[in-house]
Image 1: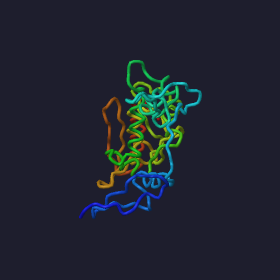
Image 2: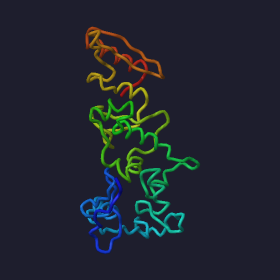
Image 3: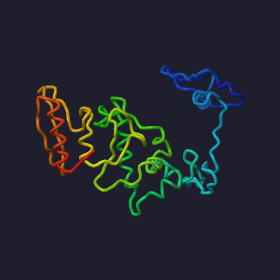
Image 4: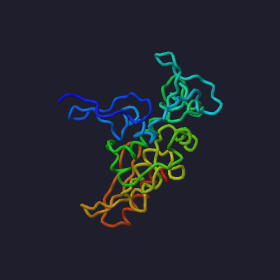
Length: 245
């Protein structure tokens, strides 16, 4: 079937063409050509004209935008090249995103910890998601958004040697009042299957209690039929190795 023009765009003086339908005819959806219908669909106004920003939207920033191939300066998402780069790399366009950077590295040394924390809670493709985001564990609003990383650093401070990010209450999310830098021992003792006494847990299949303590990578564990005996053993472990929580 030959192509034919069935009508024209209802916008005055518009010579734009319509869309080609499956029958080989040109159609004007809602009476608009392709250009004006796209504007109507996206912005609700067929005459909408996007005016690109000419200045970075960060207050008092005088940086110029990126240079396009046609020689025109443009601002990605309204940011100059400097602030847009910070936003992409660090999730924060402010100077705080830079002052914490370790010289000679692409990212702050805590950024991986921060990114992994968010991945466990929000990325369904993360293998750890079922144990975090999948059971309702989330990240507080203060640690999200464009200032999230800077706030995380401000609240947590530098990570001590041999420590990692840990939630004090494993049934609550990541927030300043529920997070700490913990040793491997503290994290192992804080698993959510533990009883009210840290280091004492119940084995459902065996029907017995376990008392355990990990010291320098070595796990010490004994099994008991009685809960009180397991608690006593745990306390003995703590006294023996001079470790208290």
